[in-house]
Length: 87
Image 1 (cartoon, helix red, strand yellow):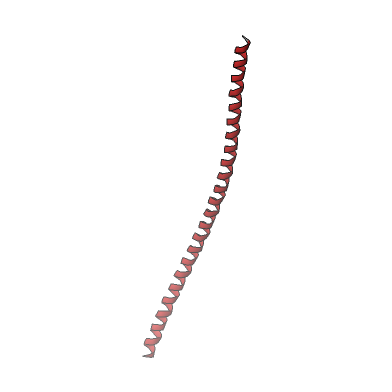
Image 2 (image 1 turned 90 degrees about the vertical axis):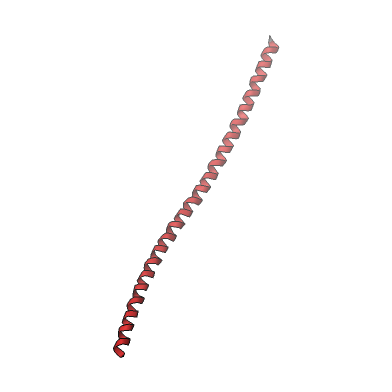
């Protein structure tokens, strides 16, 4: 009877030890994955901020370009009028 109990106890201890190892491994993996996700999330947020800033700069440059183009047209028209008056 006792050898059967010893065998049962040894089997139970082995299973418990294996579960403990797997649990510890899972916790470490979970910790590492969370840290990795945090880093990637920060990188993605920083990239999104850079994209937004560049889009804002682009919109501003487009507005400046349109204003300069309009000014250029106005000056050309003014120049044409002056050249026709001089003739």
